[in-house]
Amino acid sequence: MSRKTIVFIAASLDGFIAGPNDNLSFLDLVAKEGEDYGYAAFMSGVDTVILGRKTYDWVMKQVPVFPHADRESYVITRTAKPTLGKTVFYTGNPVTLVKELAQKEGKNIFIDGGAELVNSLLKEQQVDEIYLSLIPVILGNGVRLFHTGNPMQTSTLASVKQFSTGLVQLHYVLAKP
Picture 1 (cartoon, rainbow, N blue to C red):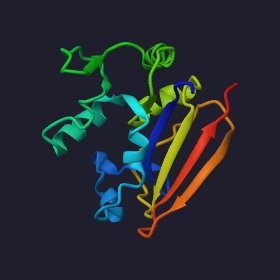
Picture 2: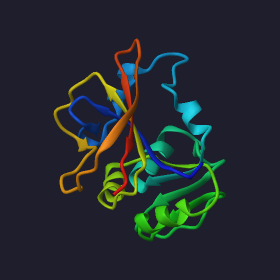
Picture 3: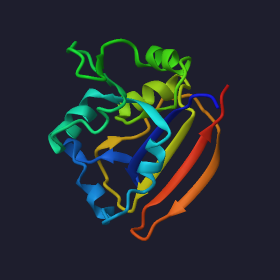
Picture 4: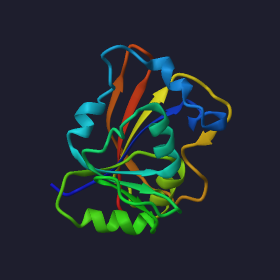
């Protein structure tokens, strides 16, 4: 099995991963006791996490300990900071990082957001799969998941899961050029 780079992310029906001012409260619409929407199963196949600095900062405002501290993690940032355990604050090119990590032995690489990181990897066709959880709400404004200017890339629908909260999770495998 080869190592894959996978985006696992939620968005509104109109394609926003955050509302105005990076507001993620719309995710609460589908919060349900005991339901993780396949996240734990997904994470069991992951040993490396890459996320943008804004996403990291938001997460750290929500919890006292970084939830991926047990995995090799890279926070993409423009400001150098010392490594914290297994968490590296990476100031280089994220595409280069992904290419290097993909060549190493290991489980899958989880791209945890945000939109700048996801789109920089899509632009260079460095994403193998996307799990897109659609939240049943139209936000009308905010941070768009997909930016314009990415090259066309076909995909195959691997699965669709519907949940009682109205969330629909689409799993796509992207074709490589």
